[in-house]
Length: 280
Image (cartoon, rainbow, N blue to C red; front, side):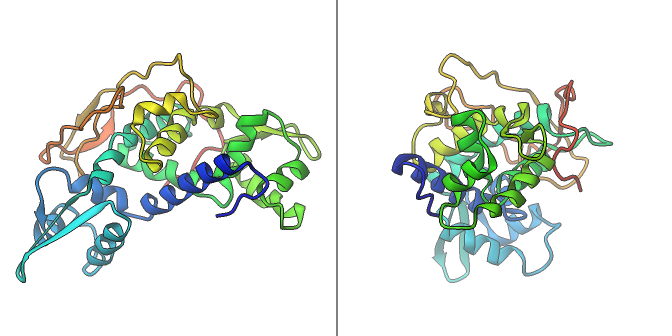
């Protein structure tokens, strides 16, 4: 993804985060990553944990996740093959509760308490909209920007009016605000609140410790301290393993494959974005 109107460092940062989102957002990927917690698993063991997948769906998913460097396949013998997280996959796991924390505060209220995994999937869907990351980056950096100026920065080789479909989508998603036609665009409270999420994804995609997220030149808040949120596990439906606590350093998350979660126990948001993210 070329962002030629941005400086090289910023363009590379956005491209890495966009690529990272493309790896983890496809349906079931996060659930499979969570189900892989613990020691290496044989295919049938893993398939039993993700039994909602139809026959034939798991193998291509595992292949793509191996190609992405998130999962490692080890062939012990022709009949004995195991799967486990790579170091890169393990490093991604502490990013997930950061996403849930944002979703709990900013996504629109649902009719029922949503499992944490659905909060993650809904949030990732918003962030993988076309040009979403670049637009959010520019608005965070410059506070208020006209549509024409955004187009020159984000899509300099395209007709500038092409910026409006992704902008309208981000407004509908509740991540961007504007006073009306012809008025500049700015981040909403929900969009601005993405700092910990995008900072963590930037650190992970660059191979840095997650505690570097607070020092991100655009999304960082060096004085802010993240507070781990509590999670309670439940057996109410087949689901992946419980999420690790939000990172405050460089933790190696402790995984217990027996722990399953159904929903976070945090209080519902006081003021959720009305347009909000997609709900199934």
